[in-house]
Amino acid sequence: MGIIENSGLDSQVKQLKEMGKKIVFTNGCFDLLHKGHINLLNKASTYGDILIVGLNSDISVKMLKGQNRPIENEKIRSKKLLEISNVDFVIIFNSETPKELIIKIMPDVLVKGGDYSKDDIVGYNEVKSSGGKVKIVPLTKGFSTTAIIKSSKV
Image (tube, rainbow, N blue to C red; front, top):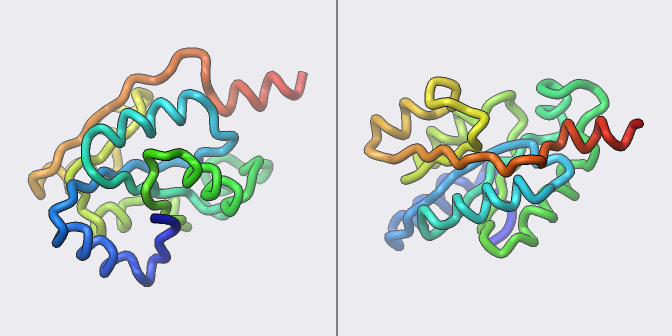
């Protein structure tokens, strides 16, 4: 349990699958971890045995959210994710999307938050075509990193 380096990803995932573990994958920036994130991660963990979280690197977050983000760096964000009891592994990735990561892992279940539709979920087709499932977890109302940032700049 902990951070998986990309170089060790294949062997780690292979070992988990050989042990018969059902792998669940979700991803995000998880900047300013809040109750909505925790609810998503807790629900995601119920879909299998091992929860792997793909975490956007600082470089990736800047590409997606702008130069003022992330608020907390990837080391802090990954440490906070690993403090959540249901998160087994974190993999930091540099690209804008986790598509390559999803293809490498080929999880049994891919999970995203309710702000996504199946057409917007990166990896949806790949996971479904390999026999996996894709779950969309409803958002926790009133919790958003963007809203937290806006309210703190009043």
